[in-house]
Length: 457
Image 1 (spheres, rainbow, N blue to C red):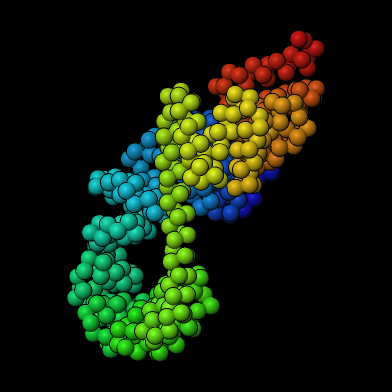
Image 2: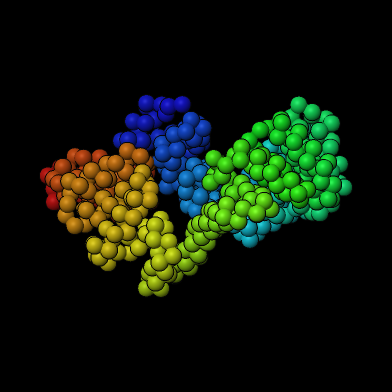
């Protein structure tokens, strides 16, 4: 869905616009249409007009959650700070943490749902999501409790038996787990592949290997080339001393083993049982290499973020030297960490360390070429070093993505003023003042430009 031409023109020119509610509605429509950049510019306008409104922070977080989850967390935290009783804010915040595999922080976020009034706000979709978040964070008792509440309200949902089966499997309650997987098979036979897989898993743990094999073959018949099904079947067949059969099944997905590394693990075990130690070693090493790389990326990101969080605290307290040290430490761990480079670029610009600023801005733009923050800081660097043409080009690109960003509009005013284009400068200053009327510096710039247009000094 496209934004209305009248509203787009108003945003572009910095004219009085529709109320916050209408802007938020338009932004949500743009989000649903996949136009996140334009949605962000609308949310930014509402934030600048009324910083105490939690909604634009929440919707900004939603827009950023897929591509910039760390930045999204900051937006969600601000929304929760402004409206702590809003269940949806807590839910999406916890879900984002779960997707980032931040278990401790995710569990802390879920404590909000100890309040029955918060839980009472959740609809069916949200209740299911809350149970799922508990499950992903390995809070299986919490997952069971929430799923029980969901099942009491929506008992006909066909997903319920499988999820209960998974929960009880994780809790080690095999008989109850088997009961729910069998219930799925009996009540929904045409879509029972997950039920057969779950049943096969339970039976394997009970050492009922032939029954496990039969259940898994049924699952694979219904859903061929499913990596989890094939790996478990391979494990069962090796346990039954049938490695040739295990190898035949696992080879059906060997071409996808790098995407599903557990296939490598299964192949390694089958080859080892057959006595082919070279092939076994090859697949074990491939599995370990892929798993090691994944864990290393995750660990580096987490360690760098810890340093950045400390730096944010130092900056809030005005301790820039300590903040700089923490940010440099973050970049030693993860040289492309976006926020660390952003903060160091800002510090470098403030201290006129132009070369250092350019290094960090370049990393920002390499990591996220379409980032408005990167474009803005690049424009600011070129403006401060006197390259007004390149500054204008970068600032206009930032404006094109977020016309509702007052900081960008004010910088453009400075650039046009420096180039002697007083009319365009006044237009940009006017936009900045309209977007952020409480900013005295923007207002003074606008008044100065108007005086120059009138021939004053």
